[in-house]
Image 1: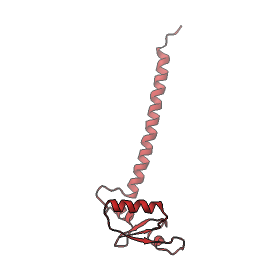
Image 2: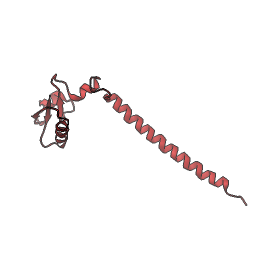
Image 3: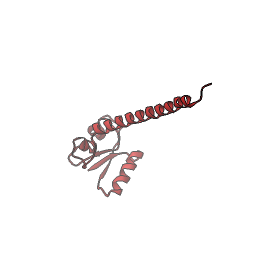
Image 4: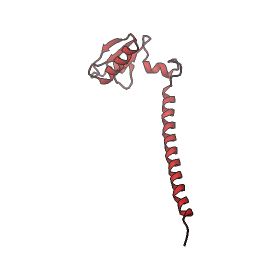
Length: 115
């Protein structure tokens, strides 16, 4: 396994710290992303670093999308659906809270004695 990276990238530092904490052996391959035909573009269509390349040549995030990642890991589609559902729940909760406040406001008017 190797990490295509740049030492100037804060994301590279974060990934390296994570790998060290988990005691995962990984070769560091410093890459210049300026030329179009660099190693990062070969493995990562976004051309972003760091990119984790597994021993079989696949990207680390491709493994999860194929369902062969750790048990319980989400695929990209599942993560996107989870984000969408969380936004929907948030919106519904806000609408519910507004409806509660509106009902309480109008209920106060009904309890007020009329003259």
